[in-house]
Length: 353
Image (cartoon, rainbow, N blue to C red; front, top):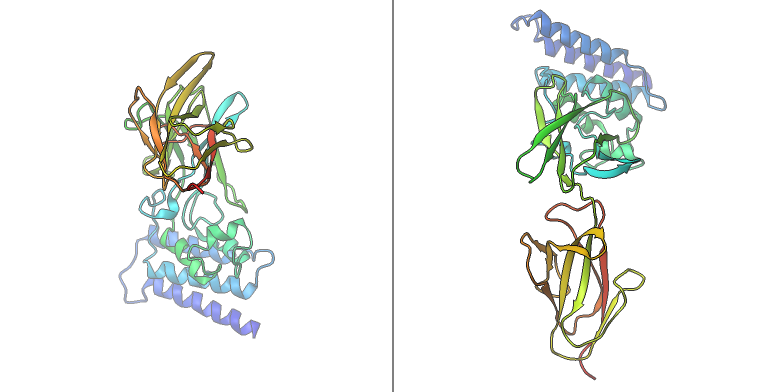
């Protein structure tokens, strides 16, 4: 039976090759295109069976990739990852300490590049075969199993559709206002095969306070660019929050998780509290009022931040008889700072009696 499966897979590959050449009556392809096809096919057929993979399954996957590539007309996309495809988004760019410096860190994203070597090609069949039949068994399964129905034949499609897509590196961009961006450096991509989701990093040379950063992928030509990542802001100091009593009920605690502000009430009248958000410069007596937190209802469905600096703190309304534990985390504008101080508080009490 196993021998029969291998023979059928071999016949499927042969049929796909014939179809890709278009038969004897088809228009003659250019030598360059034929050479590229033949080279890819030779490389595909020479791939060794991955350790632990079923040889028949591996042969079947190679046949399916050959079939899909022939069906696509052997189109090879010489381009960076398609920005229109959500799986190519770099949305987790972050800043982290790197000794005495700071580093940008993000996760490599390129649909179909299962071995994460920077190029979508025939070698991506290897990790697919090694993980065949897996259902979220390890971290790499989620990267391969794009349709979330278990790693299987359908995951060959991402390789075929993105065949030839390359990642040459990332342009590191800087902005003072989040609108005007300047490329300050490039982080070349080091090609290597890995067996887990790949994290990349770039060390920033002495960022300026409140500068924003993002990275943008480019292809092997270093001329075509994909979608830019999310932006992060460098803050030399932390944002802090402070709860100020605006009504009569007592407040205890200092606003930390183990010792939250405790607000007690037994009145039907809504209670108002002022929320102040500071950008602390770290020097005694030197604080600067910045973005402020606004609550419309309590408990809040979301937290919004005003861009303007206001002379007075904004108010949060505790709508009796709501009670429970809540927290606020201050952020700067629409980008989280490197560190922030969450304010924890608990409302206790209820209607009289």
